[in-house]
Amino acid sequence: MALMDFLKKQFIDVIHWTEDQNGVLAHRYPTQDFEIQNGAKLTVRESQMALLVDEGQVADVFAPGLYTLDTETLPVLTNLKNWDKFFASPFKSEVYFFSTRQQLDRKWGTPNPITIRDKEFGIVRLRAFGNYCYHVADPKKFYLNVSGSREDFTSEEMEGQLRNTLIGSLSDLFAESGVSFIDMAANQEEFGAALKQKLSPVFESYGLALDALVVQNVSLPEELQKVLDTRISMNVLGDMDRYTQYQVATSIPLAAQNAGGLAGAGAGLGAGLGIGQAFAQAMSPAALPKAAAVPSPTESAEEMMVTLDRLHGLMTKGILSQEEFEAKKAELLKKIG
Image 1 (tube, rainbow, N blue to C red):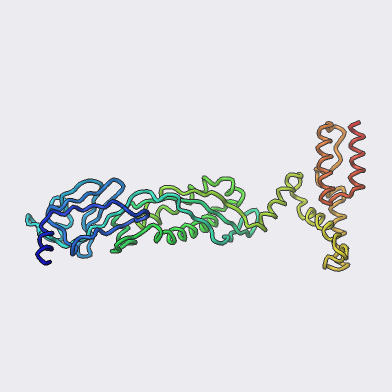
Image 2: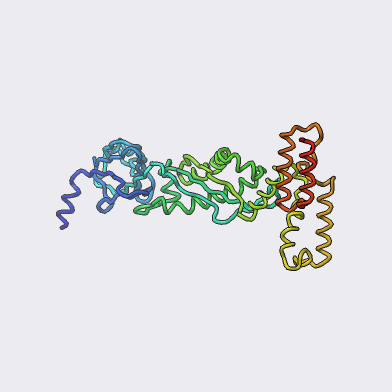
């Protein structure tokens, strides 16, 4: 057996890696007793790089190509070993291969909403998700900082660290930008570019290059989205300044459905009277939304019909009573006639 091992070591080694398994970022080539022969052939394929490690010290790095391992192709190792023209054979070293292919469609997302201070809405919680891709760009740095002497190191093992780093940078970017949620949601491509720029140095510290980062969605949790939808509805009606009055007015029909009426909504008679007063103020001529005002004589018939449609919407929401709507409707129709 010892004789066979000796004879095997006399043949020229052929060292290569075919990447049989997807997702492997770093692979240690299984040499016999970690020994490599003088004149061994090293094949590094396109989308790969190789690294020679001698007794724990990183030596030479190889780009794609075919190499004959000798003093000419191993300058760093030759210097470490103090070789001149004499090349020891075999020599104990390890060869590590690294896949430089892009790791595509890596998912990221906020597991929990991120709390930030929004300049328009105050304290809000945001969600975001998207994808990114990267590749190994610096094998030496990746070996020293990440993969080490493992036989194999996969992209799945890297996933958690990269995703958590991304989410942390996302929180910082939200806070530092001072951009409102609405502007973020409307400019996701620019937001993704800013996040990629912030993350690139972090990826580089691992020996990786961040090739692309996409923000697919920025959103509010469901309960906050409903509040935003209400504000948008008020904006469509033409008067965002009456948002609070609108909230009071829309609560009246809901309270009326309870067995106790307004007072039975849980606030007692005093609260019921307070809501009634707020409703009266909201429905006063000075407080009515501009969209609900009676049109001036100069308005066209088409504009009057738009106003009539908006008034009907206010009646549906309980802001106007049936009687008030009918009265304004008759007034508008009279003007049109």
